Image (cartoon, rainbow, N blue to C red; front, side):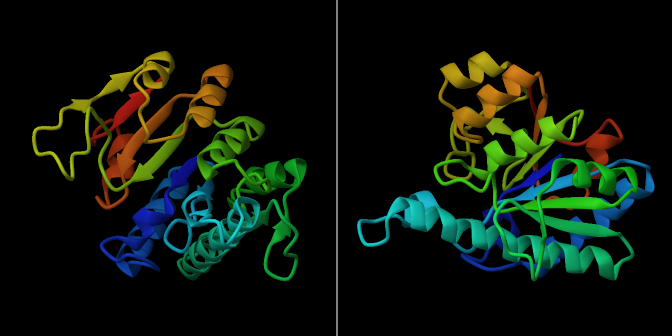
Length: 228
C-alpha cells in the first residue's frame, strides 16, 4: 500500500500539482510493477483542500470533509491518467458514489484488479467524514492483505521536531507503534497508527520529493523511518 499526502504532490506550490513529482511518482510505480509487486494507492487531497482545517464556522466539518474527498478523486484521476500513459494498467475505486469517473469500491473487485496486476487507486478516503486518508490507507491495506504501507511525505522519515524549521532535528529511524502514539507524533494520525498496530502492519515513512527513494527502499537502500 502506497499512501501519498496531497501536500507532497504540490511540491513547492501551495496548491495543485508539481507535475515533475507526479511524473516521477508514476515512473517509479512502473518500476515497482515491473518487479512484480502488486500496488494499491491512497492519495490525500491536501493540495486542494484539507477538510479538518477548512471547517471554519462557515462551512461545517462534515461538508468540508466531503469536499476533501473530492480533492482525493482529482488526485487519483490525475495519477491514473499518468500511469495509463506510460503503460501501467490502473483503476480508480471510490468510496463515495461518483460512477462517471471512478468505479465504486467493492473489496472483491479490488482484489481481482490486483490479481490481474492492475494498480488500484482508492479515492475518497473511507467515504466517511472525520476519518483521514491515512486511516483509509491502513483500512484498505488491511482489506487487501498488504504486506506493508509506504507513506510518502515531504521529509524522509520521522524527526523529533520539524526538520524543515529546525536544522538540529534528529531523525528517528525506527519506532514502535506504542512509542509513536505516546510521543504524539503527527506524521500519521493516531487512529491510523492504532489500526496498523492492531493489524500488525509495518509503516515506512519516506520522502516523495526524492524521486528514486521508494525504489531504493524496495532494493534495501534509501532513507526512511520504520514504524512497527
